[in-house]
Image (tube, rainbow, N blue to C red):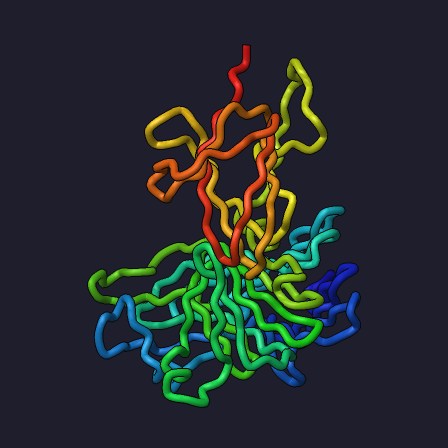
Length: 351
């Protein structure tokens, strides 16, 4: 790794003189990810003066005035270890500074962009752009407890009106057999048109707060190229790993034993996601809320870390609607496409 080349067993990345990606080559699948002649991880600033609702609206004409952020002030390799390598890129834009650390992992086929931005601007919209070489007339965006598809063209007036799309942890663009996902840990505005994937990073409105979005921001977005579509590639799982990373802590020896892998609660199918594990509002029972996200019907086995004495299905207010037969630490249930289910469980008392 140096200031012009990043490489691991998954990717070979070339940078231009401005620190932008001129090539992202997928070594495993032998294909270029970026469109020919286009730049990736390009930071774009737009004049943003909506007609009304300055802090909430983005009017489509914002794209008429755009600046590429290419004022490079420093490039430095900061890590080159057995787990990951890192390249730090510093940029300046007007009165603001942008520090971006790009991470490549030895065993994760994902590219992370860790950003620290000291933002001083007003009424300027900041986006990161990836023009990917993917042919698709629709993109998929994660929403709460599911996902939604939106067109990648402006063929009709209602398509044109949906130029900015709300999404949570990921947006995906896939063609037959291959795709690219743009993941994030806290940025929820996207636009994908003509195979250019963009994520909105900052808005900096002046009304009702004249200093909105100013000062220091810290966030991560990631590029995740993959075989197959978002379902087969485990995009939802990868986005959760970005948002809920594993933490390591050094501890002294403890009494007792634990297995090498331990789960408080787990499922035997990968089309259902456990979203909530919490104490019940009106008792000492435990609430488990989950949802189906691949549009598949299934019979699921839920397994807990210790024996159960009681389980019931609930509504979202935790009112019990049906009791469930338990066997030791497991029970089965059926789930429909995109259905949300909530269970109240009670563990066997430890003597």
